[in-house]
Image (cartoon, rainbow, N blue to C red; front, side, top):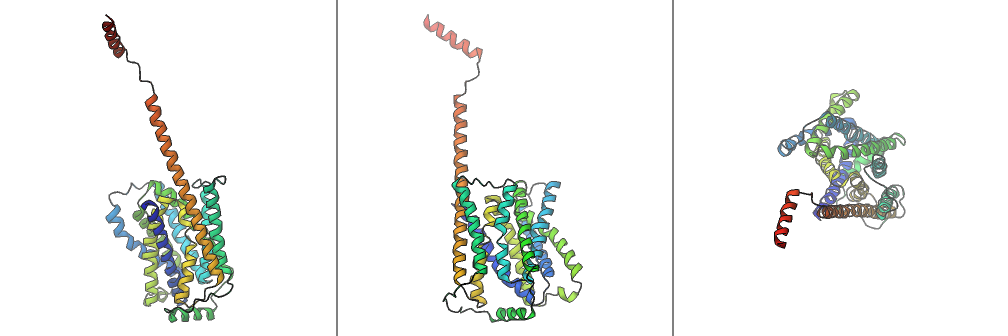
Length: 371
């Protein structure tokens, strides 16, 4: 029971953390912080926060670093951190948080297709588990799209008592500034989801030979810090743009680095090792549901019928995928037990090797007994 519950709780915590990051990062970017600078600070803070944990917990248990593992970590940093985060924050700058959240939910579909291509998942469409996984993925993505682009009537939930006026003022300033691009923003977010799906596949392979999540995430963030810092410096030369004097910018960078990279990537790596890449990616649509609720509570946004229907589809999709994965795991465990039992029976039925000395002793004994 605990083996199934802990990854579930970990993935829910991940989506809660990302919901907070979406709001804080959007506000920091609206305040004038360049998204590339925010990404660079995020990796630096993540690296610093992970270093002591990697040293204390995995210093003696970490496997020997090989060229193959180092290359996998390099690919992980380029896809899962540098490529994913730069594209996502650029997309967040030139679109809305709702569109960014909606398009990032292409992640399960991308991961499912890539996992099939690389042999990490099997479609098995003729089985109930295979149908459940495929249907669940379609329902989750469909619910995310419906939640984002269909409103309908307003739900009569009233106004939130914890309305955040500062956040609403920042949102109005950004809207009046016109920082949107109907093509660049969505394309960047779609590219972010694609490269992140590639990272899931790489991480699933690396976790088999280098199952030390703190250490692998530390090395990944260290490499990404160098990459993101070089890219950000090549674009933003003004020293004032790198200032963290604003509490909003400092808090956003610390939260994104320590929580949403340092802690979250460790949880994701551990969950991929336990459950596989598809299981982890299918939780991403929950981010939309959480963001909708938080936006209603803090930003005074209205909740619509489309939000309710889309959320229901997302939850149903998650249930189908989790049920399908659990059925596959139970079936594999049962097959493994039957196979082991059959091997034991075969060993018991095997003829013992012929030993002439034993046969002679038994023969003499029987001869004397006849006499």
